[in-house]
Amino acid sequence: MSTEGFEAVFLETHNWGKAAGFFRSLGFELEFETDHGSGQFRNGDGPYVFIAEVPEDREPQARMVLRVPDAEAFRPGAGVEVVSPFEDTHYGTREMTVRDPDGRLWTLQAPGK
Image (cartoon, rainbow, N blue to C red; front, top):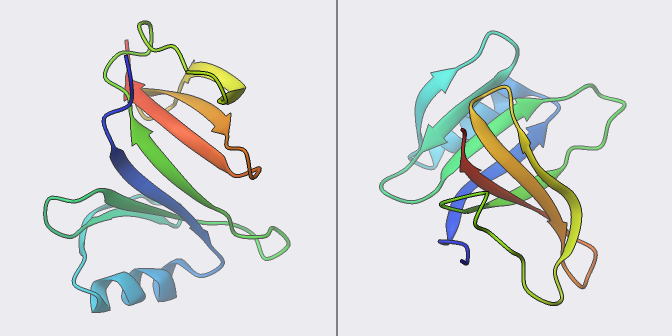
């Protein structure tokens, strides 16, 4: 089994309000906002963008999220370094972290159990 393409872009920011305004200016619509400086945007049928505010002393990160239909059936191919196996998230999915040959981290996201 392989991935099914891009599910999302996960972005961290130091200023939720400015980041939200930026994406709204580009035509993204807010699907939901949490009560702790984060929320999800969408523009058309493409991947969603999830933005989360982090403290000023932390460098904002960006992560591409690839869709996996079944965490139990997925087996990464050669050349894929698994950093962390599939784990349940607090938002109802299962996620695995992998590293590409250039050292970038990627998230593989599957439906929750």
